[in-house]
Amino acid sequence: MQDRSPKISLNAKGPVVGALMLVFLILHTVFWVIPFYAIALIKVITPTARLRHMWTGVLAWISLTWLNSNIAVADFVLGTRWQIDVPSTLDKKGSYLLTSNHQSWVDILALIKALGKETPFPRFFLKQELIYVPLLGLCWWALDYPFMKRHSKEEIAKDPSLKGKDIETTKKACERYRGQPVTIMNFMEGTRYTPKKAAKSPYQHLIRPKAGGVAFVLNAMGDQIQSMLNTTIIYPQGARELWDYLCGRLAAIRVVVEEVKIPTEFLGGNYQTDEVYRANFQQWVSDLWASKDQFIADQLVLAKQQETSRG
Image 1 (cartoon, rainbow, N blue to C red):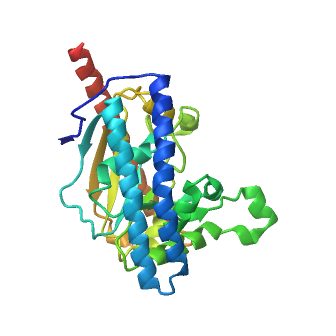
Image 2: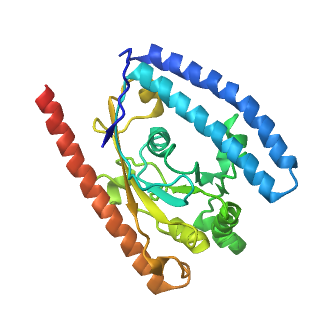
Image 3: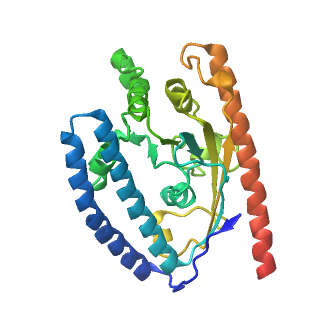
């Protein structure tokens, strides 16, 4: 286990610190966006795929430097305690499918903190609306993040041609990543955990996972993906929103990464049309989630015992 607690902490908490941190993040983002946009423009006008891949690598380096420096400053100011377990076998030149439970926007920082220096820069699927986020939307687009437009059952009923559009987007995105190291990130629950959303879940600390997205990635890139990084994010004091984190109200975060070999029978097949394949894949994902749920429960009990002993 790596204990990545900061050596120095101002131990200051509250909305004033949160506001100062927010101002820093905005100014810091503007600072890094300037060179990012310049490189993105060069990438757009570059005629060959090989050179575009090179510029994408430069954009990923800028993004990772920006994120890591954000986290370093936050650690210095906020004093959050990190406990991170990461396999020693990970390879920056490999390709991985990263899946994790999802509780708040802080999860993104936790994943970068744990894996940013251990694996290729992560790409994840975004809602179409997020392309309009100021500054960051164009950055995600330039990094080849796939934007997904969700369609309701009512919309598909009115226009059957909308069915399967997400699958097409997934396949096109995966084609862009071929021939280059990549970490494809997928929050398998599809949304952030809340007690209301979890009301019908069979798990105590998780929402029922949606296996389809992962199956489509494996179908499109199964021969390139070497393993799944089954990641669990635990907030011993309970999950908080990004504002709470910036205010220093998140004392501890634990991230545990397990490298899981993907069964060979799941590297092919058709999730949509093959009922046997779909049922077996869903069972495999359900078993992973059941183990994750029990692990979270055990770790929360342990954290509470440790907190009691300190008190």
